[in-house]
Image (spheres, helix red, strand yellow):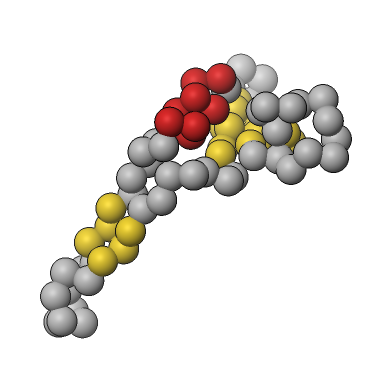
Length: 75
């Protein structure tokens, strides 16, 4: 696991905006998972109706902010 700031990776005092997870499954398989930990994009969870048994409406809005897209592309 590692944390870094994409805009200023060499400054140890900067606030990280990316977490990198590395999971080794075998000698030939691994996962490399970069995660934005401070995205600017915001989603919503809305009530579908006044019926508590109805599922909510989830609108994730992934990558709706240009900065998030640029950081993701730089990974």
